[in-house]
Length: 235
Image 1 (cartoon, rainbow, N blue to C red):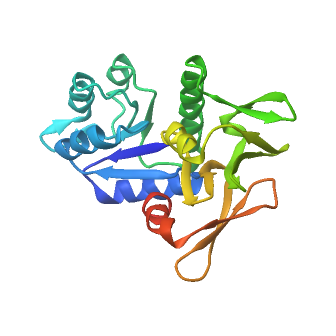
Image 2 (tube, helix red, strand yellow; image 1 turned 135 degrees about the vertical axis):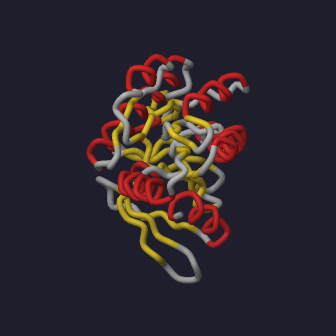
């Protein structure tokens, strides 16, 4: 999931980034002005924009209006110190309106709500489930239940709490299909759902080992993928 923080005050962006990292959000980008918000949004097409109302000589409502004209339709959460814009925020279909200072529980609740909404949108398009084959039986696997996807002896498997399931998709195809969600390539043989990661353990030569919630597996972050991993997850 790609999240863009738009606020002209760096301490506010830092505080929100810290909370989002603690929640487990993978890709976080920042913009400190109207122009930066527009330019970055066009490039990354964020899933969620946390948007301040006051942005120097511009405001958050102008950001939304401009992005809609350019075909960028992100879920918007207004973050502000002012209560009096709430009605207008929901008139432009904002998903939430959070008052500063931020609280962990408040932001977490918002992320979970929007994540469910995004999953539902994918579900309505028929893209939320992956198919896997188990001795001729076709399994439909929910994206949110996947811990990681890996290749082994020219085959690709989907790892869930119930075990590993063979899929006909290639790892590269799945990476493209899942790039707008919380999946990131960590190794030539692994694609990981960051939302399922519980620990990131520094290893040798700028590599890492990942541990997961609810299972004992460990997955490597190789040197070839560590730079992108650090930029998207550890930034």
